[in-house]
Length: 134
Image (cartoon, rainbow, N blue to C red; front, side, top):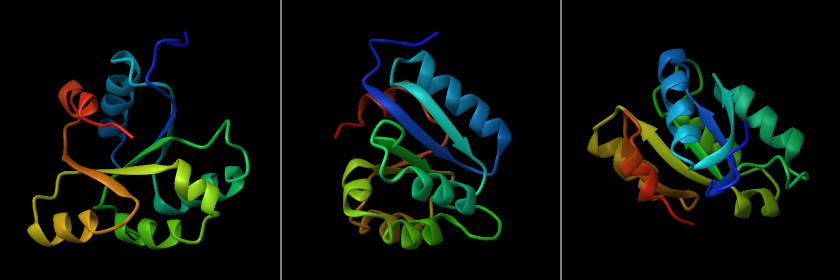
């Protein structure tokens, strides 16, 4: 069932942890934050999804929730690869880092990225979702 009063139409959740994805997806939809959540378990899957849909505004997410600590290519690799997307895709998609990392280096490195609008710690909560605005 679609939530027609959702604040956003599409979100993208990038995290290798299936339990976190399940909980976060439920939080995003049940809170009315977004109508639709696309879940990708890796940087490669997420970048492929964005490249495949970068010219389709209907499928591009307004908000991307990005975990930093993933095996193989981490969230910082995603941020670098995100840079290669079309200008329209980069302007539409805003990134919220959703991480368990409390490292000041990680927080600073993510926060200075021009596409990251917020850094929040796991677990995602309604309070965090309410604080996100474009």
